[in-house]
Image 1 (tube, helix red, strand yellow):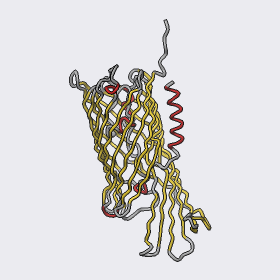
Image 2 (image 1 turned 90 degrees about the horizontal axis):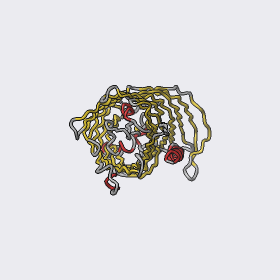
Image 3 (image 1 turned 90 degrees about the vertical axis):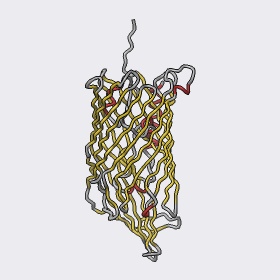
Image 4 (image 1 turned 180 degrees about the vertical axis):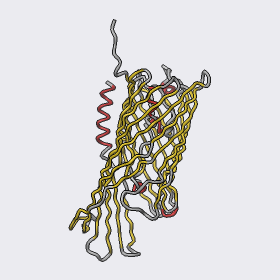
Length: 416
């Protein structure tokens, strides 16, 4: 029954979520958009740390954790996010509902696990107007949508009882469509430029975990994760048009022409993360430090004088409390209570200002009676950017739901 429910929910969620614009952030104007995937719901609710995993909760941020699997693990998740975009003198609100991830993991042998799935890499979804009418008589508008996703296949192996090694192979794909329009006071027609980019590339991600007992009641978990820089091939098509505005403000092309524009190559930055934490079956607390080699990122077409990229970084802390996992008469004691915090330098620099992103998370893991499965619910409040130097501050609040199913799909039943 669980398998059927999982399959139906996944199909519905995937068909709905991939059709949406996944962010309203004006910072998605640059590069290949804003980074989207921070981990599965249970991991995000602990700040997005890559160090924690157990036999029923894998961590797709680090493929070495796949070696822990003793049951088939099926995860899907989505988020509804509410944004307030503040530019100082003006502000706007936006809402987005997105599909976040779909993963399946299972053990092959005692020391060997496998995982596959589809995850978002980045998202583009800006829409804004620039009014210079009182200065030079021009009005311009900008619209962008799309993003990059990845399909991965990974494996993890226990080299020893304490040490595990893992690797993910990833295929990245997606498209980004942008549109800009320019009008001038007193001129009958305006101009429009549409750029369509189809992207693809390959990447991989490696990880190590080392877990040991400090004493009878306390375990130490440590991890290292490394992703080398990857290249995205971008096939670009540009169309320029003369347009006129209807009474409702819709641009209607008067004449259009496709313009030759060279294909390009873009970078997925390298990343290395170190994590450590302590705990046991009832509680855990840990942290990560992640360094990103984003200083050589590029915009798809234009180089903007006031925009550059620097190496990024992230610090995350989080954990959980599970009062009594085997309680039979008190459901509240079987709930997993999670919380976390992260602070990130995104690597994007505008007007000599580094764009920062910080957030706090809280979540509940609600067990499904009679199974090792759970429904994970989380909330996140965060801030990206600033209103200083003509920039935009994004206040966002998200409500996420993740379904985690565990079952012994491949175990043969023996009868006497």
